[in-house]
Image 1: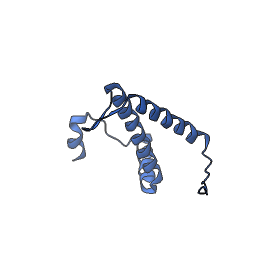
Image 2: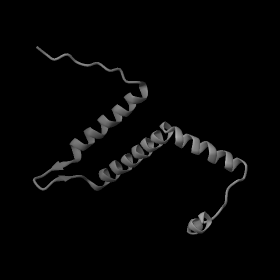
Image 3: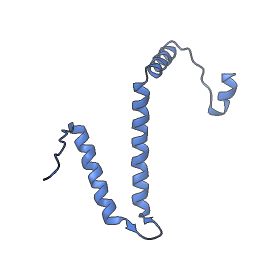
Image 4: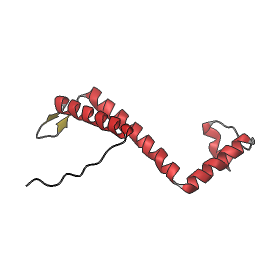
Length: 100
């Protein structure tokens, strides 16, 4: 007797992400070599994987900020201050001086 399968319908955007993941997995299987010492990944594939990882991390960080009511209040406050001209321009090396 087979176990019951849980069926979940993914939104269209999730399906495209899922297809992308499947595509990457197929690339991995074709290009990755497993040895006793570890896993060997071609440099170009590794760089592409890291680039995708960074993008996913940026999206997740943005979603976390948008889910935080205090962060949204701070963003709104900052937008109002900028619109009203309540800000100071400086170069990166002078940030600490400006904040004092």
